[in-house]
Amino acid sequence: MTPALPETDAKRRADAWTALEAIARRDRDVRIETLFEAEPDRVERLTLEAAGLWLDLSKQAFTREGLEACLALADACDVPAWKRALFGGAAVNDTEGRAVLHPALRAPDGAHFEALGEPVSREVEQVRDQMVAFAEAIRSGEHAGATGARFRAVVHVGIGGSDLGPRLVWDALRPVDPEVDVRFVANIDPREMAEALSGLDPASTLVIVVSKTFTTQETLANAALARDWLAAALPAEGLRRHLVGVSAAPDRAEAFGCGRVFGFSDWVGGRYSLWSAVSLSCVIGLGGEAFRDLLAGAADMDRHTLETPPGWNAPVLMALAEIYNVEGLERRARTVAPYAHGLRRLPAFLQQLEMESNGKGVVRDGQAVAHGTGPVVFGEPGTNGQHAFFQQLHQGPEAVPADFIVVRETMPGVDGAPLWSNALAQAEALMRGRNTAEAREGMIADGLDPAEADRLAPHRTFPGNRPSTTVVMDRLTPHALGALLALYEHKTFVEGVIWNINSFDQWGVELGKVMAKRVLAAAHEKRAPQMWDPSTRSLFDRLA
Ligand code: F6P
Image (cartoon, rainbow, N blue to C red; front, side, top):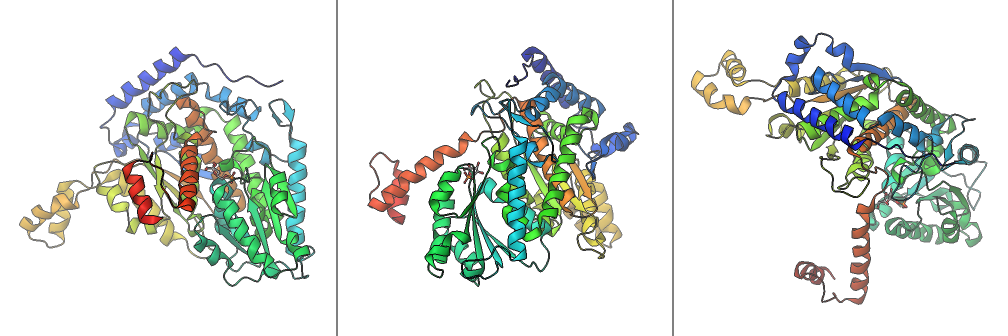
């Protein structure tokens, strides 16, 4: 039987929102650094361990009562019941009538997940085993190319959720000198494919086409380019050995010419799919054991989110901090600063995860949202971002909350302090700031003329009071990465529950796709339809 979705008491939810807003208004000007004295147990209450990650939310803006109001809101929104609905395979994606079961992909063997009442775990395990076996056969040379040459390179073709997760996993976990060269192509700009293929030998290159729908314009165009490149150099009868598909529409992948196809189900959202065969390229590059460790890290976070009370629950607390910042303090953007070169694509991954999931304007019943929803997410790896947009984070008139992701040791045996000390310093500087008197005194102590110090002091003042969360891991292992990505997935879901939106559809990407088809058709005909607006027509005339 298909489990039902929770029925939330609308009045209770509305009252909880009102209570939260009142406290946020009251505490709006409270300085975060004063809370450590006012709430002596603050660090103890707001630091926690989850699936091997260490989180510190004590530099967030909510006061004790603010957090209590947030927790009451989570309770009024039935967060635990919604989590059970998701893990229980209910139609949580109710605009598409689908279950949302990415946790089933990373569950240990022997699990019993059901999607809309149908068992799925056995099939998940079978595909996973086949995929890992295939990857190991490529790694060992047992499965070779059309000419008998061992595969030395993988070109992964996909976009959005079929690109960002695997690309991040590869960047984060790849050896410095990998045995298999894994390259990614997403953009329909042929330049990206040209760069990816540069220097590769078709005889030793495997092309993996990843697309849930196998209808995505960019991916099909790039896949055709790669297939042509292979076909120009290889015997026709061996071409299929070099083409692998990963898709929820396996027939289309086969029809395209893929000799091997790994499937996944429609209950896996594109941006939640890295736990499936979508990461085949990474499994070839890293090995099956690393992939299983990645899944185990995520599964540990799944257990944490299901079993830990809300006040100690990492995804819940991160979601509540965001909701307090967005709703209570009207902070509509958040920056993510990973202090690890391997996590440089994390901001891009989170942009899709969070903005495609929660960038919505209507609640589940179709009414316009009454609250701000997902913020704009942006970021760059530390320390690079510090030398670019951090100026605005420190002194711009809008406060932007930050997530600092800190890896204690990014290279085995090499002191990580020069990197992580920057993260701690930035978080503290954002919170404390520096008032005008301090700025002035500092300059005078450095020997500046008092009149010049007066003139410069406002420019060297930092308002501070900018909240942040810090997530710490010892090393960027597959387990830690899996836990981190699952943490953000669950945070995103909890936010969606509280905002009462469906985090698992993405209708907002459709209109542009339809328009793009029309523009391309017009470009082929070299004629812009009269009905277009004058601006688009004039741009078309300039380009066509
Ligand atoms: O256009 C957005 C989107 O549908 C994403 O949700 C998805 O991850 C991406 O395109 C790629 O889709 P597919 O895997 O079907 O090629």
